[in-house]
Image: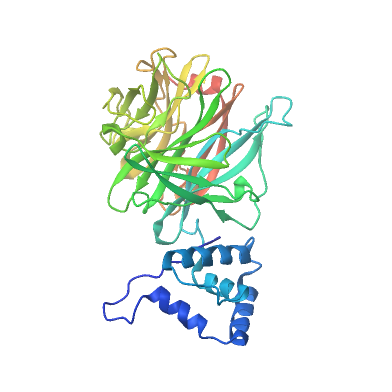
Length: 410
């Protein structure tokens, strides 16, 4: 649960003035004693439920004062906090669903020994109004295949944002609160295109060469009416840039970036027609104006309806390991995999004839039944950790080895 700005909604044309301005005047009309009593009630109800609650009330008050342009010098600090509280609300960001995790090595590997890897996992969280946001968890993947998630406190904070015009479109920079951990940070939609949600982030640690790493994610920005693919870019998971993918390919969803250039170009896997997987190449990370070439289509009954990628390809000694998802009878989702050539990933060397992971028993029930789905896996040595969504209601974890996965492909 997070504390978020509350925006007053629709008002009739016959209403008496601006609702927000009228609300402030109503609060201003209280005596100092009445205002103190009301604020104590707010404190009793909410102070222990959120982190730095009073500071957030003051920040919200300042935003409202700036937008409405009124003179607040007559208000005491207590009354300003009270006004700020009227323009906030609690929001349970994962009340409806939690799903579609992605996982990458953490930028901070200090203190890791014996081959252990600290990781960052992203999650698609769906709350009131079916709005999707991005949440995070941190953990450690041990060389023997075991893993642990770091504890998550009861307090969550929404990332702050700043909007700028970039290349004729809107880019957003969001900032994690300096005093908040990544595991307690939530990134909410900011722009009009994102208003319906940030969906299915596929994270990858991209190697620019020479030890220069950038963490890049592709996700779907849903306005409530239309979709487009966007990029999330960060080097430290403290600030994040969200920007549109330009070009024809950007109108689709489900794009996944390879973790390095191939043949001097950026390469992605995408589903350009809603059914098949395509390979796309570009000289510009932000512009994908190529429809790509057909990589693979449905071949087996469990994927006859459609196939898609399940995150960025993973480099192995055998080639690029690409996890896929297939949709079969009764719209049941299952995970599969394919092996792509190391130097020419347009060549499919092998693929799984049967699913590597499918919904069974309790995993079949949930917000959207009969679905297992992932947006990325983590390889460490020969071990692979796959976090996956269970019927859009929970997240499970599967482990395997590169060798075991190679055996099931043909």
